[in-house]
Length: 530
Image (cartoon, rainbow, N blue to C red; front, top):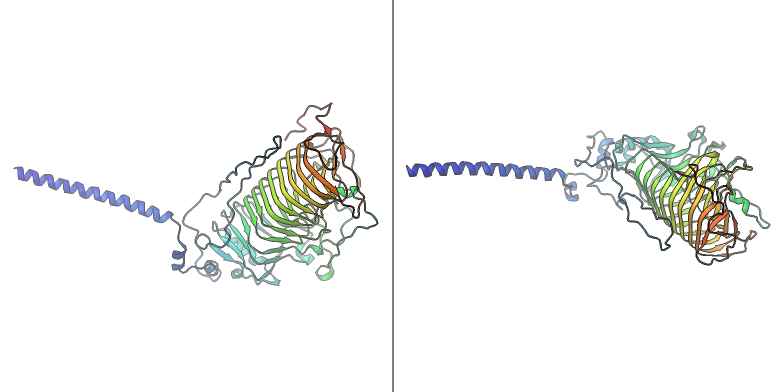
Protein backbone atom coordinates (compact mmCIF):
# COMPACT_ATOMS: atom_id res chain seq x y z
CA UNK A 1 0.00 0.00 0.00
CA UNK A 2 2.82 2.40 0.84
CA UNK A 3 4.61 1.53 -2.42
CA UNK A 4 1.51 2.29 -4.42
CA UNK A 5 1.08 5.55 -2.56
CA UNK A 6 4.66 6.57 -3.20
CA UNK A 7 4.33 5.67 -6.89
CA UNK A 8 1.18 7.77 -7.21
CA UNK A 9 2.85 10.71 -5.51
CA UNK A 10 5.82 10.45 -7.87
CA UNK A 11 3.50 10.31 -10.85
CA UNK A 12 1.58 13.39 -9.73
CA UNK A 13 4.85 15.28 -9.13
CA UNK A 14 6.03 14.41 -12.64
CA UNK A 15 2.80 15.70 -14.18
CA UNK A 16 3.06 18.98 -12.24
CA UNK A 17 6.68 19.41 -13.27
CA UNK A 18 5.84 18.94 -16.96
CA UNK A 19 3.01 21.47 -16.74
CA UNK A 20 5.30 23.99 -15.02
CA UNK A 21 8.01 23.54 -17.68
CA UNK A 22 5.44 23.98 -20.41
CA UNK A 23 4.28 27.29 -18.95
CA UNK A 24 7.86 28.45 -18.45
CA UNK A 25 8.78 27.69 -22.05
CA UNK A 26 5.69 29.52 -23.26
CA UNK A 27 6.66 32.59 -21.24
CA UNK A 28 10.21 32.52 -22.56
CA UNK A 29 8.89 32.10 -26.08
CA UNK A 30 6.60 35.11 -25.70
CA UNK A 31 9.43 37.21 -24.32
CA UNK A 32 11.72 36.12 -27.13
CA UNK A 33 9.12 36.86 -29.77
CA UNK A 34 8.52 40.33 -28.34
CA UNK A 35 12.24 41.04 -28.21
CA UNK A 36 12.73 39.95 -31.80
CA UNK A 37 9.86 42.14 -32.94
CA UNK A 38 11.03 45.35 -31.26
CA UNK A 39 14.80 45.26 -31.63
CA UNK A 40 16.61 47.29 -34.31
CA UNK A 41 18.05 45.45 -37.29
CA UNK A 42 21.83 45.76 -37.35
CA UNK A 43 23.74 47.02 -40.34
CA UNK A 44 25.29 43.59 -40.99
CA UNK A 45 21.89 41.89 -40.96
CA UNK A 46 20.59 44.60 -43.30
CA UNK A 47 23.33 43.71 -45.80
CA UNK A 48 22.67 39.98 -45.45
CA UNK A 49 19.13 40.59 -46.67
CA UNK A 50 20.54 42.04 -49.88
CA UNK A 51 19.37 45.64 -49.35
CA UNK A 52 21.51 48.63 -50.28
CA UNK A 53 20.98 52.40 -49.95
CA UNK A 54 19.19 52.58 -53.27
CA UNK A 55 17.66 49.10 -53.62
CA UNK A 56 14.28 49.99 -52.17
CA UNK A 57 13.65 52.95 -54.42
CA UNK A 58 15.07 51.15 -57.46
CA UNK A 59 12.79 48.15 -57.02
CA UNK A 60 9.79 50.37 -56.55
CA UNK A 61 10.52 52.30 -59.71
CA UNK A 62 11.37 49.19 -61.70
CA UNK A 63 8.14 47.40 -60.88
CA UNK A 64 9.39 45.35 -57.94
CA UNK A 65 7.61 44.91 -54.65
CA UNK A 66 6.56 48.08 -52.91
CA UNK A 67 8.79 48.89 -49.93
CA UNK A 68 7.19 48.19 -46.57
CA UNK A 69 7.28 50.55 -43.60
CA UNK A 70 9.61 49.66 -40.74
CA UNK A 71 8.11 47.10 -38.37
CA UNK A 72 8.75 49.11 -35.22
CA UNK A 73 6.09 51.76 -35.03
CA UNK A 74 6.64 55.09 -33.34
CA UNK A 75 4.28 57.88 -32.39
CA UNK A 76 3.19 60.07 -35.28
CA UNK A 77 3.74 63.21 -33.21
CA UNK A 78 7.22 63.34 -31.66
CA UNK A 79 7.65 65.37 -28.53
CA UNK A 80 9.91 68.41 -28.58
CA UNK A 81 12.31 68.29 -25.63
CA UNK A 82 13.02 71.46 -23.73
CA UNK A 83 16.57 72.75 -23.57
CA UNK A 84 17.82 73.97 -20.20
CA UNK A 85 17.35 77.70 -19.65
CA UNK A 86 20.23 80.08 -20.20
CA UNK A 87 20.81 82.75 -17.58
CA UNK A 88 22.11 86.14 -18.63
CA UNK A 89 24.83 87.83 -16.64
CA UNK A 90 22.64 90.94 -16.50
CA UNK A 91 20.20 90.53 -13.58
CA UNK A 92 17.27 92.37 -15.17
CA UNK A 93 17.68 90.98 -18.68
CA UNK A 94 14.65 89.23 -20.14
CA UNK A 95 14.44 85.46 -19.83
CA UNK A 96 16.32 83.57 -22.50
CA UNK A 97 14.05 81.28 -24.50
CA UNK A 98 14.09 77.55 -23.98
CA UNK A 99 14.05 76.28 -27.57
CA UNK A 100 12.12 73.09 -28.15
CA UNK A 101 13.96 71.44 -30.97
CA UNK A 102 14.32 67.97 -32.35
CA UNK A 103 17.41 65.82 -32.31
CA UNK A 104 19.89 67.01 -34.97
CA UNK A 105 19.84 64.77 -38.03
CA UNK A 106 22.57 62.20 -38.64
CA UNK A 107 25.57 63.23 -40.70
CA UNK A 108 25.33 60.24 -43.00
CA UNK A 109 22.77 57.78 -44.30
CA UNK A 110 21.71 54.98 -42.01
CA UNK A 111 20.30 52.27 -44.20
CA UNK A 112 19.22 50.19 -41.22
CA UNK A 113 16.77 52.88 -40.18
CA UNK A 114 15.65 54.53 -43.41
CA UNK A 115 14.17 53.61 -46.75
CA UNK A 116 15.87 55.65 -49.49
CA UNK A 117 13.96 57.04 -52.48
CA UNK A 118 16.32 58.43 -55.14
CA UNK A 119 14.86 60.98 -57.58
CA UNK A 120 16.94 59.41 -60.38
CA UNK A 121 14.97 56.18 -59.96
CA UNK A 122 11.74 58.10 -60.54
CA UNK A 123 12.78 59.59 -63.86
CA UNK A 124 14.77 62.71 -62.92
CA UNK A 125 17.57 63.48 -65.42
CA UNK A 126 19.62 65.98 -63.44
CA UNK A 127 21.09 67.59 -66.56
CA UNK A 128 20.12 71.15 -65.61
CA UNK A 129 17.70 71.63 -68.50
CA UNK A 130 15.16 68.79 -68.46
CA UNK A 131 12.13 69.56 -66.30
CA UNK A 132 12.41 67.21 -63.31
CA UNK A 133 9.36 68.53 -61.43
CA UNK A 134 7.18 65.43 -61.99
CA UNK A 135 10.01 63.13 -60.95
CA UNK A 136 10.42 65.06 -57.69
CA UNK A 137 6.67 64.87 -57.08
CA UNK A 138 6.60 61.11 -57.66
CA UNK A 139 9.58 60.57 -55.38
CA UNK A 140 7.96 62.61 -52.63
CA UNK A 141 4.70 60.64 -52.86
CA UNK A 142 6.61 57.38 -52.42
CA UNK A 143 8.71 58.68 -49.52
CA UNK A 144 5.68 60.28 -47.92
CA UNK A 145 4.08 56.86 -47.35
CA UNK A 146 7.01 55.42 -45.38
CA UNK A 147 7.79 56.68 -41.90
CA UNK A 148 11.34 58.01 -41.41
CA UNK A 149 12.17 57.51 -45.08
CA UNK A 150 14.64 59.60 -47.08
CA UNK A 151 14.08 61.41 -50.36
CA UNK A 152 17.53 61.62 -51.95
CA UNK A 153 18.64 64.37 -54.35
CA UNK A 154 22.09 62.98 -55.22
CA UNK A 155 25.32 64.91 -55.63
CA UNK A 156 26.92 65.82 -58.96
CA UNK A 157 23.57 66.52 -60.65
CA UNK A 158 21.70 69.75 -61.43
CA UNK A 159 17.91 69.40 -61.28
CA UNK A 160 15.67 71.89 -63.07
CA UNK A 161 12.52 72.01 -60.92
CA UNK A 162 9.45 74.23 -61.22
CA UNK A 163 7.15 75.37 -58.40
CA UNK A 164 6.29 72.37 -56.23
CA UNK A 165 4.56 71.66 -52.91
CA UNK A 166 5.79 68.83 -50.70
CA UNK A 167 2.70 68.58 -48.59
CA UNK A 168 1.05 66.65 -45.78
CA UNK A 169 -0.97 66.25 -43.68
CA UNK A 170 -1.18 62.58 -44.62
CA UNK A 171 2.58 62.02 -44.85
CA UNK A 172 4.23 59.76 -42.34
CA UNK A 173 6.38 61.61 -39.78
CA UNK A 174 10.14 62.18 -39.75
CA UNK A 175 10.79 62.34 -43.51
CA UNK A 176 14.34 63.38 -44.48
CA UNK A 177 14.94 65.41 -47.66
CA UNK A 178 18.60 64.66 -48.35
CA UNK A 179 19.86 67.41 -50.65
CA UNK A 180 23.37 66.74 -51.98
CA UNK A 181 22.89 67.95 -55.55
CA UNK A 182 21.74 71.31 -56.94
CA UNK A 183 18.16 72.41 -57.59
CA UNK A 184 17.66 75.38 -59.94
CA UNK A 185 14.53 77.43 -60.56
CA UNK A 186 13.03 78.12 -64.00
CA UNK A 187 13.91 81.44 -65.60
CA UNK A 188 11.08 81.11 -68.11
CA UNK A 189 8.17 83.35 -67.14
CA UNK A 190 5.69 80.77 -68.48
CA UNK A 191 6.66 78.39 -65.67
CA UNK A 192 5.33 80.84 -63.08
CA UNK A 193 2.04 81.90 -64.66
CA UNK A 194 0.87 85.13 -63.05
CA UNK A 195 3.34 84.72 -60.21
CA UNK A 196 3.55 82.57 -57.08
CA UNK A 197 4.37 83.28 -53.45
CA UNK A 198 6.81 80.37 -53.12
CA UNK A 199 8.92 78.02 -55.21
CA UNK A 200 9.62 75.01 -52.96
CA UNK A 201 7.06 74.60 -50.18
CA UNK A 202 6.75 72.06 -47.36
CA UNK A 203 3.37 72.14 -45.61
CA UNK A 204 1.72 70.47 -42.62
CA UNK A 205 4.48 67.99 -41.86
CA UNK A 206 5.78 66.48 -38.62
CA UNK A 207 9.49 65.94 -38.15
CA UNK A 208 10.58 67.13 -41.61
CA UNK A 209 14.35 67.50 -42.07
CA UNK A 210 16.21 69.06 -44.99
CA UNK A 211 19.91 68.31 -44.80
CA UNK A 212 22.97 67.80 -46.95
CA UNK A 213 25.64 69.71 -48.84
CA UNK A 214 23.46 70.69 -51.78
CA UNK A 215 22.32 74.00 -53.25
CA UNK A 216 18.93 75.61 -53.85
CA UNK A 217 19.47 78.27 -56.52
CA UNK A 218 16.54 80.60 -57.19
CA UNK A 219 18.34 82.35 -60.08
CA UNK A 220 16.64 85.51 -58.88
CA UNK A 221 18.47 88.05 -61.01
CA UNK A 222 15.79 87.65 -63.71
CA UNK A 223 13.23 88.89 -61.15
CA UNK A 224 15.14 91.92 -59.91
CA UNK A 225 14.73 93.92 -63.11
CA UNK A 226 12.00 96.48 -63.67
CA UNK A 227 11.26 96.83 -59.97
CA UNK A 228 7.89 98.63 -59.63
CA UNK A 229 8.00 102.19 -58.36
CA UNK A 230 5.82 101.31 -55.36
CA UNK A 231 7.86 98.26 -54.42
CA UNK A 232 8.44 98.45 -50.64
CA UNK A 233 11.83 99.87 -49.69
CA UNK A 234 13.64 99.93 -46.39
CA UNK A 235 12.46 102.96 -44.43
CA UNK A 236 15.83 103.47 -42.76
CA UNK A 237 17.23 104.66 -46.07
CA UNK A 238 15.78 108.05 -45.15
CA UNK A 239 18.42 108.32 -42.41
CA UNK A 240 21.33 107.74 -44.77
CA UNK A 241 22.65 110.72 -46.70
CA UNK A 242 25.35 109.95 -49.25
CA UNK A 243 28.36 112.16 -49.88
CA UNK A 244 28.78 112.74 -53.63
CA UNK A 245 27.54 109.26 -54.53
CA UNK A 246 24.47 107.88 -56.22
CA UNK A 247 22.69 104.68 -55.35
CA UNK A 248 23.26 101.61 -57.46
CA UNK A 249 20.55 99.30 -58.75
CA UNK A 250 20.97 95.60 -59.50
CA UNK A 251 22.06 94.73 -63.03
CA UNK A 252 19.45 92.26 -64.29
CA UNK A 253 19.88 89.25 -66.52
CA UNK A 254 17.15 88.82 -69.12
CA UNK A 255 14.76 85.94 -68.59
CA UNK A 256 14.40 83.17 -71.14
CA UNK A 257 12.69 84.38 -74.33
CA UNK A 258 13.32 87.98 -73.19
CA UNK A 259 10.01 88.25 -71.34
CA UNK A 260 9.39 90.01 -68.04
CA UNK A 261 8.95 87.86 -64.97
CA UNK A 262 5.72 88.18 -62.96
CA UNK A 263 5.49 91.03 -60.46
CA UNK A 264 4.87 88.53 -57.62
CA UNK A 265 8.27 87.21 -56.59
CA UNK A 266 8.44 83.80 -54.90
CA UNK A 267 10.20 82.73 -51.72
CA UNK A 268 12.78 80.03 -52.50
CA UNK A 269 12.03 77.65 -49.61
CA UNK A 270 8.99 77.92 -47.34
CA UNK A 271 7.63 75.84 -44.46
CA UNK A 272 4.03 76.22 -43.37
CA UNK A 273 2.08 74.70 -40.49
CA UNK A 274 4.79 72.17 -39.64
CA UNK A 275 6.17 70.76 -36.38
CA UNK A 276 9.73 69.87 -35.47
CA UNK A 277 11.39 71.19 -38.60
CA UNK A 278 15.16 71.03 -39.20
CA UNK A 279 17.20 72.68 -41.97
CA UNK A 280 20.94 72.10 -41.90
CA UNK A 281 24.01 72.05 -44.13
CA UNK A 282 22.45 73.35 -47.34
CA UNK A 283 23.07 76.53 -49.34
CA UNK A 284 20.22 78.76 -50.56
CA UNK A 285 21.23 81.43 -53.04
CA UNK A 286 19.82 84.13 -55.32
CA UNK A 287 16.19 83.80 -54.29
CA UNK A 288 13.76 86.02 -56.21
CA UNK A 289 12.57 87.30 -52.82
CA UNK A 290 12.92 85.78 -49.32
CA UNK A 291 15.30 82.81 -49.17
CA UNK A 292 13.96 80.73 -46.24
CA UNK A 293 10.58 81.32 -44.60
CA UNK A 294 8.76 79.69 -41.68
CA UNK A 295 5.07 80.46 -41.23
CA UNK A 296 2.90 79.01 -38.43
CA UNK A 297 5.53 76.45 -37.41
CA UNK A 298 6.48 75.13 -33.97
CA UNK A 299 9.87 73.66 -33.11
CA UNK A 300 12.34 75.03 -35.69
CA UNK A 301 16.05 74.21 -35.84
CA UNK A 302 18.27 75.91 -38.45
CA UNK A 303 22.03 75.53 -38.28
CA UNK A 304 25.14 75.44 -40.49
CA UNK A 305 23.19 76.98 -43.38
CA UNK A 306 24.58 79.38 -45.97
CA UNK A 307 22.33 82.01 -47.59
CA UNK A 308 23.65 84.39 -50.22
CA UNK A 309 22.46 86.96 -52.73
CA UNK A 310 23.85 90.37 -53.79
CA UNK A 311 23.59 93.16 -51.26
CA UNK A 312 21.59 95.25 -53.74
CA UNK A 313 19.04 92.53 -54.60
CA UNK A 314 15.62 93.90 -53.53
CA UNK A 315 13.65 92.34 -50.65
CA UNK A 316 15.75 89.18 -50.47
CA UNK A 317 15.50 88.46 -46.73
CA UNK A 318 17.66 85.61 -45.48
CA UNK A 319 15.42 83.90 -42.88
CA UNK A 320 11.88 85.12 -42.29
CA UNK A 321 9.83 84.03 -39.25
CA UNK A 322 6.14 84.69 -38.65
CA UNK A 323 3.58 83.13 -36.30
CA UNK A 324 6.24 80.63 -35.22
CA UNK A 325 7.41 79.51 -31.78
CA UNK A 326 10.31 77.64 -30.21
CA UNK A 327 12.96 78.59 -32.76
CA UNK A 328 16.72 77.98 -32.63
CA UNK A 329 18.95 79.43 -35.37
CA UNK A 330 22.72 79.20 -35.07
CA UNK A 331 26.09 78.74 -36.78
CA UNK A 332 25.06 80.11 -40.18
CA UNK A 333 26.25 82.66 -42.74
CA UNK A 334 23.67 85.06 -44.16
CA UNK A 335 24.36 87.56 -46.94
CA UNK A 336 21.44 89.14 -48.78
CA UNK A 337 19.73 92.31 -49.97
CA UNK A 338 17.39 92.76 -46.98
CA UNK A 339 17.19 91.57 -43.37
CA UNK A 340 19.50 88.66 -42.60
CA UNK A 341 16.82 87.50 -40.15
CA UNK A 342 13.34 89.00 -39.99
CA UNK A 343 11.12 88.24 -36.98
CA UNK A 344 7.47 89.08 -37.55
CA UNK A 345 4.24 89.04 -35.56
CA UNK A 346 3.22 85.92 -33.67
CA UNK A 347 6.79 84.87 -32.88
CA UNK A 348 7.95 83.92 -29.40
CA UNK A 349 10.73 81.93 -27.78
CA UNK A 350 13.28 82.63 -30.52
CA UNK A 351 17.00 82.13 -29.86
CA UNK A 352 19.55 83.26 -32.48
CA UNK A 353 23.30 82.92 -31.92
CA UNK A 354 26.63 82.54 -33.74
CA UNK A 355 25.51 84.21 -36.96
CA UNK A 356 27.59 86.05 -39.59
CA UNK A 357 25.44 88.69 -41.29
CA UNK A 358 26.46 90.85 -44.23
CA UNK A 359 25.79 92.33 -46.60
CA UNK A 360 22.16 92.94 -45.73
CA UNK A 361 19.97 95.04 -43.48
CA UNK A 362 20.85 93.39 -40.19
CA UNK A 363 18.58 91.43 -37.85
CA UNK A 364 15.12 92.94 -37.42
CA UNK A 365 11.99 92.49 -35.37
CA UNK A 366 9.20 93.74 -37.62
CA UNK A 367 7.87 95.63 -39.32
CA UNK A 368 4.83 95.19 -37.07
CA UNK A 369 1.31 96.61 -36.91
CA UNK A 370 0.85 97.52 -40.57
CA UNK A 371 -2.69 98.58 -41.58
CA UNK A 372 -3.77 98.91 -37.91
CA UNK A 373 -3.16 95.25 -37.12
CA UNK A 374 -2.27 93.71 -33.75
CA UNK A 375 1.27 92.39 -33.41
CA UNK A 376 2.68 90.21 -30.63
CA UNK A 377 6.37 89.33 -30.26
CA UNK A 378 8.04 88.15 -27.05
CA UNK A 379 11.06 86.40 -25.58
CA UNK A 380 13.60 86.99 -28.35
CA UNK A 381 17.35 86.58 -27.85
CA UNK A 382 19.98 87.51 -30.44
CA UNK A 383 23.57 87.03 -29.30
CA UNK A 384 27.09 86.30 -30.54
CA UNK A 385 26.57 87.87 -33.98
CA UNK A 386 29.08 89.42 -36.37
CA UNK A 387 27.78 92.05 -38.79
CA UNK A 388 29.84 93.57 -41.58
CA UNK A 389 28.83 96.21 -44.11
CA UNK A 390 25.10 96.08 -43.26
CA UNK A 391 22.56 98.90 -43.27
CA UNK A 392 21.34 98.16 -39.75
CA UNK A 393 22.63 96.13 -36.85
CA UNK A 394 19.80 95.12 -34.51
CA UNK A 395 16.48 96.81 -35.18
CA UNK A 396 12.84 96.95 -34.08
CA UNK A 397 10.40 98.58 -36.49
CA UNK A 398 6.65 99.18 -36.11
CA UNK A 399 3.98 101.09 -38.01
CA UNK A 400 1.82 103.87 -36.65
CA UNK A 401 -1.73 102.75 -35.89
CA UNK A 402 -0.81 99.24 -34.80
CA UNK A 403 -1.52 97.56 -31.47
CA UNK A 404 -0.11 94.76 -29.36
CA UNK A 405 3.35 94.56 -27.83
CA UNK A 406 7.02 93.66 -28.18
CA UNK A 407 8.60 92.60 -24.88
CA UNK A 408 11.42 90.56 -23.41
CA UNK A 409 14.11 91.30 -26.02
CA UNK A 410 17.87 90.78 -25.55
CA UNK A 411 20.56 91.77 -28.05
CA UNK A 412 23.88 90.60 -26.63
CA UNK A 413 27.50 90.44 -27.81
CA UNK A 414 26.95 91.94 -31.26
CA UNK A 415 30.14 92.86 -33.14
CA UNK A 416 29.53 95.42 -35.90
CA UNK A 417 31.96 96.50 -38.60
CA UNK A 418 31.19 99.48 -40.84
CA UNK A 419 27.49 99.19 -40.10
CA UNK A 420 25.47 102.27 -40.97
CA UNK A 421 22.98 102.17 -38.07
CA UNK A 422 23.95 99.61 -35.40
CA UNK A 423 21.02 100.14 -32.95
CA UNK A 424 17.58 101.16 -34.19
CA UNK A 425 14.06 101.42 -32.77
CA UNK A 426 11.62 103.00 -35.25
CA UNK A 427 7.94 103.24 -34.29
CA UNK A 428 7.28 105.40 -37.35
CA UNK A 429 8.21 102.82 -39.96
CA UNK A 430 6.88 103.49 -43.45
CA UNK A 431 8.02 101.69 -46.60
CA UNK A 432 6.00 104.01 -48.85
CA UNK A 433 6.50 107.59 -49.91
CA UNK A 434 3.94 108.90 -47.39
CA UNK A 435 2.16 107.42 -44.38
CA UNK A 436 -0.69 108.86 -42.32
CA UNK A 437 0.10 110.05 -38.79
CA UNK A 438 -1.72 107.96 -36.16
CA UNK A 439 -1.61 108.02 -32.37
CA UNK A 440 -1.79 104.32 -31.50
CA UNK A 441 1.29 102.12 -31.67
CA UNK A 442 2.65 98.69 -30.85
CA UNK A 443 4.07 99.05 -27.34
CA UNK A 444 7.76 98.28 -26.69
CA UNK A 445 8.96 97.26 -23.24
CA UNK A 446 11.98 95.45 -21.85
CA UNK A 447 14.48 95.98 -24.69
CA UNK A 448 18.03 95.19 -23.56
CA UNK A 449 21.31 95.88 -25.37
CA UNK A 450 24.55 94.55 -23.97
CA UNK A 451 28.06 94.39 -25.42
CA UNK A 452 27.26 96.02 -28.77
CA UNK A 453 30.68 97.01 -30.11
CA UNK A 454 32.44 98.03 -33.31
CA UNK A 455 32.25 100.76 -35.96
CA UNK A 456 29.42 102.69 -37.62
CA UNK A 457 29.25 104.91 -40.69
CA UNK A 458 26.07 107.01 -40.17
CA UNK A 459 24.58 107.01 -36.64
CA UNK A 460 25.31 104.79 -33.61
CA UNK A 461 21.85 104.82 -31.99
CA UNK A 462 18.44 105.82 -33.36
CA UNK A 463 15.50 105.56 -30.93
CA UNK A 464 12.30 107.00 -32.46
CA UNK A 465 9.39 106.05 -30.20
CA UNK A 466 5.74 107.04 -30.10
CA UNK A 467 4.56 109.90 -27.91
CA UNK A 468 1.33 107.99 -27.28
CA UNK A 469 3.15 104.74 -26.42
CA UNK A 470 6.75 105.52 -25.43
CA UNK A 471 9.43 102.85 -25.35
CA UNK A 472 10.05 101.86 -21.71
CA UNK A 473 12.62 99.74 -19.87
CA UNK A 474 15.26 100.19 -22.58
CA UNK A 475 18.68 99.35 -21.12
CA UNK A 476 22.19 99.69 -22.54
CA UNK A 477 25.25 97.92 -21.12
CA UNK A 478 28.81 98.04 -22.51
CA UNK A 479 27.88 99.76 -25.77
CA UNK A 480 31.02 100.97 -27.58
CA UNK A 481 30.55 102.27 -31.13
CA UNK A 482 33.14 104.33 -32.99
CA UNK A 483 32.61 106.29 -36.21
CA UNK A 484 34.22 105.55 -39.57
CA UNK A 485 33.99 108.41 -42.05
CA UNK A 486 33.34 106.91 -45.46
CA UNK A 487 30.67 107.98 -47.91
CA UNK A 488 27.90 109.12 -45.53
CA UNK A 489 27.09 112.08 -43.29
CA UNK A 490 27.72 111.26 -39.63
CA UNK A 491 25.13 111.94 -36.91
CA UNK A 492 24.99 111.86 -33.11
CA UNK A 493 22.77 109.44 -31.18
CA UNK A 494 19.06 110.26 -31.42
CA UNK A 495 16.27 109.52 -28.91
CA UNK A 496 12.58 110.44 -28.94
CA UNK A 497 10.25 109.35 -26.11
CA UNK A 498 12.61 106.58 -25.07
CA UNK A 499 12.90 105.70 -21.36
CA UNK A 500 15.24 103.34 -19.59
CA UNK A 501 18.69 103.01 -18.08
CA UNK A 502 22.36 103.32 -18.99
CA UNK A 503 23.85 100.55 -16.87
CA UNK A 504 27.39 101.47 -17.88
CA UNK A 505 28.90 104.48 -19.64
CA UNK A 506 28.55 104.24 -23.41
CA UNK A 507 30.72 105.26 -26.34
CA UNK A 508 29.60 107.67 -27.62
CA UNK A 509 27.56 109.07 -24.70
CA UNK A 510 23.79 108.78 -25.16
CA UNK A 511 22.43 111.69 -23.10
CA UNK A 512 19.12 111.70 -24.96
CA UNK A 513 17.90 108.49 -23.26
CA UNK A 514 15.47 109.51 -20.51
CA UNK A 515 16.19 107.73 -17.26
CA UNK A 516 13.33 105.99 -15.46
CA UNK A 517 9.68 105.93 -16.49
CA UNK A 518 7.54 108.49 -18.33
CA UNK A 519 6.09 110.99 -15.83
CA UNK A 520 2.64 110.53 -17.34
CA UNK A 521 2.90 106.81 -17.85
CA UNK A 522 -0.53 105.74 -18.98
CA UNK A 523 -2.31 102.67 -17.68
CA UNK A 524 -1.94 99.70 -19.99
CA UNK A 525 -5.11 98.54 -21.70
CA UNK A 526 -6.18 95.57 -23.78
CA UNK A 527 -4.69 97.51 -26.68
CA UNK A 528 -1.21 96.59 -25.38
CA UNK A 529 -1.60 93.02 -24.22
CA UNK A 530 -1.15 89.93 -26.34
